[in-house]
Length: 51
Image (tube, rainbow, N blue to C red; front, side, top):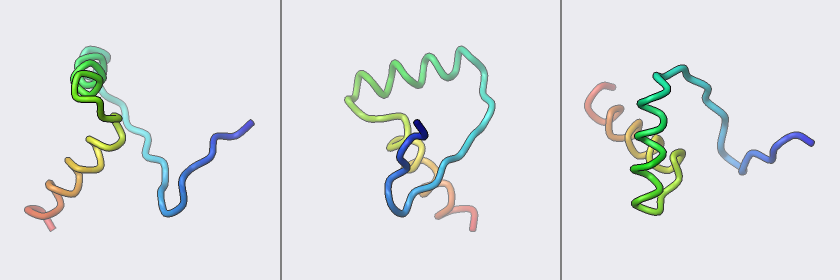
């Protein structure tokens, strides 16, 4: 069964170091945030200074 993508959202696939992903996942879990939520915030912040 295909996964349900929330309305107004799209999927982004990237390759990162395994260690970076594990550390990121642990840090997100400690803050009770999803990795997607944090990535979305970081991308928006990056865009504010780079567009």
